[in-house]
Length: 124
Image 1 (cartoon, one colour):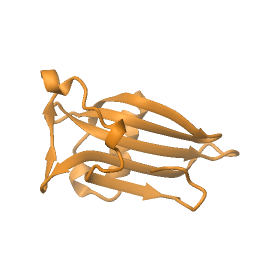
Image 2: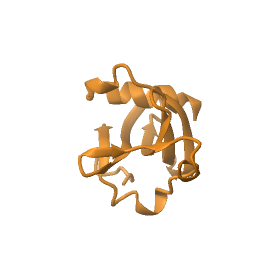
Image 3: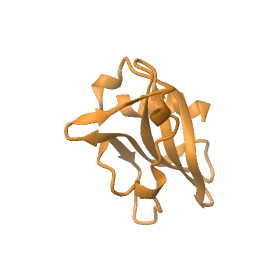
Image 4: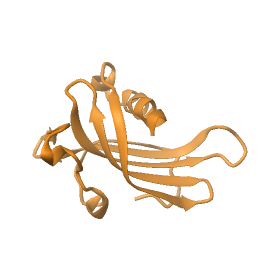
């Protein structure tokens, strides 16, 4: 999970300039599922480093069978309430866990980056 702390912000920076000076402090998996031979799905929460708040995250990653590269990925982070990303202070009673797995398909995500997706992908 510690690698995702660095990787997710890098991916988000590619499209969202506001992530240029933002990072993650931790990623807490709620559910980790091997979807296929080279695919993994990680659903959980993460801490935004600048204000130490927790937000939900969804990551689906497929690595190459032959090379040390990520072939495709889908990264979603933060839940929108209206036009604002809902942030729960880390350490608060409500910030211990933000259950997301049961409603990952219905969340209005604040950030969504995807690449390399095709019709054989098994992500949400």
